[in-house]
Image 1 (cartoon, helix red, strand yellow):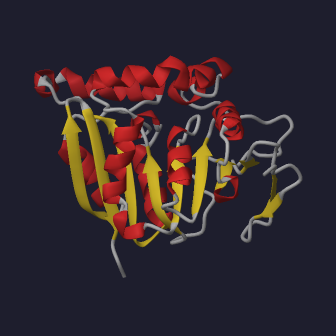
Image 2 (cartoon, rainbow, N blue to C red):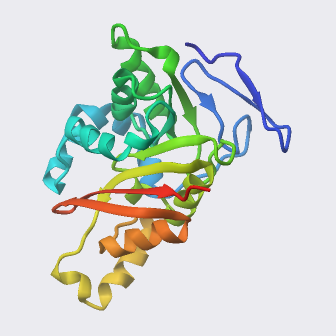
Length: 259
């Protein structure tokens, strides 16, 4: 339902956050009148109304050229990794227009689905798509605007985090995955899809320099090996890394160590 008038208070700093018609705004700058923060180019691109509108109307369909098998198939693949946490709470991180949020909610596999994105316009699109669907279980879904590097959840409170075609768009994947590790319950599962660019040119000495420059300018990241992504998960406290490939496409999974 509507989040207008909803108020949440941080137990630590006592700051109060409010909701709009479509989502709860839980970014650090929420409520500011004059102050604003610009994000890297890759992040700001997805905040625009045009890209948000086009995402499910042609943009996402082009991912097939990068080996992405399509949302329905990707959802089925993700379910295999999420078997151990069915019935719990899942965060669809960088949810965009809610393509996977809707699939998770309609599947009935989770008690609560949190659609999380930094883009206000993506969340508005997500809300509109949900409103258009008949018999959609709206009571299971909460739309939240938040920074992936500053998740507004208590430590060890989430059973699963899914990030579809998002990791390569995060300004700091290590900070984001560390936050994901923090909020996951012991045994909780992280599943993500991304690109791995591991062709013959990755061994050339200028490739890493070029990659670093691109990350600095655009704020986007691309991995050049499965080992790199495994190391990222391991250093952020996740274990049991697996990777499934189809050309550049990769679906990775890892879990928080059980206590």
